[in-house]
Length: 116
Length: 113
Image (cartoon, rainbow over all chains, first blue to last red; front, top):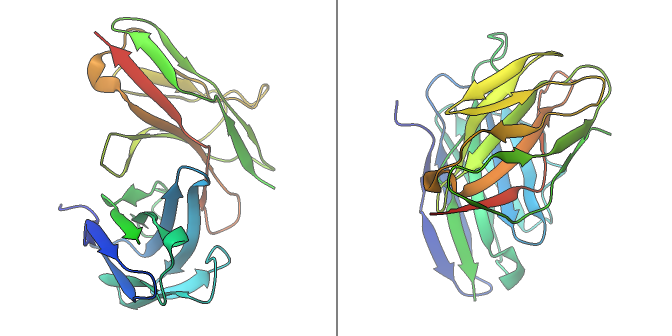
């Protein structure tokens, strides 16, 4: 299995630009999570989906952030407009189908975002 | 609410030294507990887990025992290697149907030859 795939691995953009981060979860996993990691705040859960439906987006910092999951194999996290304080590593994670007893999450390699 | 308190780092050890990274938790009910490891430039990887009291999770020489009486899940390894240098995160699953994870702040371990 290829694991969770994220793209791009690195993104450098200017303040005010739109940024789109992409994630392909592990096939067969029905839950997907977006996290942000910074030195100051550590690992923060932004939003998670169950069966493609957003369940809890209370961690999304502002309306500038939005996430979608149009199908079971693809999700996006968009920031529009981006600001320097959005600079962080963004991780996507997926979890096996509920009812299997497996609740650990599998993380992608992350996207390092730098907003100048 | 549910939370995890993790030993602050950084921790620097010589190769073959004994490692302990402390982790305590606050939760209602009986959460599952996890240790994740993050190697430089990579995402988090599950290192080990325990799903009920007195369970011991183990992997790659690392161990942690779920202690309900002390609400702890300390990570230990008898002899660390340079390749163990990474950031270690303690986490618990919440007890709602969501089973989401609450992570500690992470502990950076550096092992020197």
